Image (cartoon, rainbow, N blue to C red):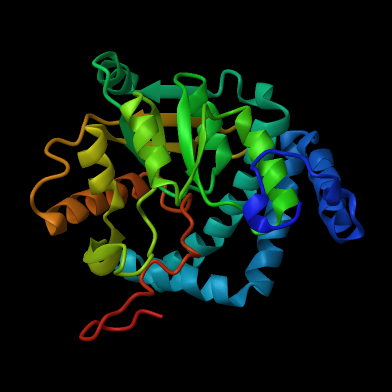
Length: 311
């Protein structure tokens, strides 16, 4: 592999056997061993790792607490603190749920329910592509796996900086998703939508105002991406909100997929109204299971002149 630009996702290169990649191979072997553990043990490890991360990742901890303070002003200081800790627990549980989806998917048997599948099937029956408006859930690829039991999802992804790690993740995801589309490959996204695919897309992070507009998110102005408006307009696809979450006892969890009706008149002529509506959809989803979201990302980092700083 001569340069990063020569790299083909999912392809093995002999250079991956060089000593600089040995730490990745060791980590992969460890993760595979963790994947075969029973859920009761995985759950205990998750809580231990969450406590460790809470202690060591001070910046992430502060960001999580601040995000929850801003988005849930009705919570007391104690509630915010408790929920922030649960975010870290759910993140670690989600890591094991993803490992289970990759290496022992049978674990999810009889644990999944779905609501609203007809919204996807009816849209695809008319030849329409579907942009599934979702969130950066702590369930990670476990959410993709449970969806794949009912329909064939594509996913938009950001390649890993380490090519060996990217290879492993890409191949594991290949067992779940019909296609994996680089987030920078707009032509690929449009092509798949025109072909009638259903693509999981999460327009819920702050990428600045070069790619978006300030719009309210939990009643707080936030930089909101608008690329999906162009995707929908060019491809003639439809937008359908999709959300998945864990519920019930943590010792014996269940998973639910919620698919809502097509978002009418998206895109409209009003960019701000579209961004506000999509943010409201995401906000409604997150209120179902608030701690199963990656609140440790700086959702409000972009603050143009005249806006109060959040962090």
